[in-house]
Image 1 (tube, one colour):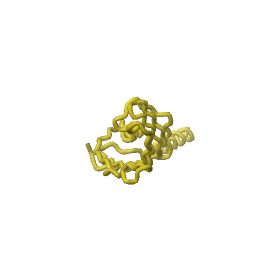
Image 2 (cartoon, helix red, strand yellow):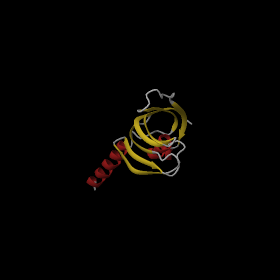
Image 3 (tube, one colour):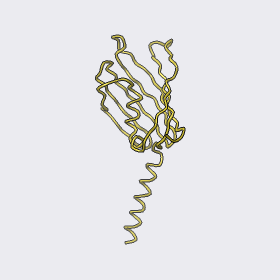
Image 4 (cartoon, helix red, strand yellow):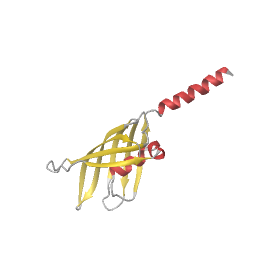
Length: 142
């Protein structure tokens, strides 16, 4: 009986530890910087937004990253999605107007995240590759 209780307690503690670094619900400030390798002169100001993450949002980093990495895109679906050890690696393809394909890796902690996303898309009839750096910091409650 003691062995079962000890095993159950060990499982509970291991589970709590594995989720300890997940995103915390609350108000987040998110920044994305974009560059185009083929056009070094194109350097727009970083895109900033504040977003409230619910507990449900915080449990699934793919929802947050999908909306950040393909703003305005339609027909999007993950072709690869791996969340392990606080790192989310993904491939996201959008069949809409811009034909965006994003690939990246984002490291998450309870109060911050950062990562890199490479995206290709149809811009004015030409395939263009963007290198994006994304980061977020929890700034308070919603």
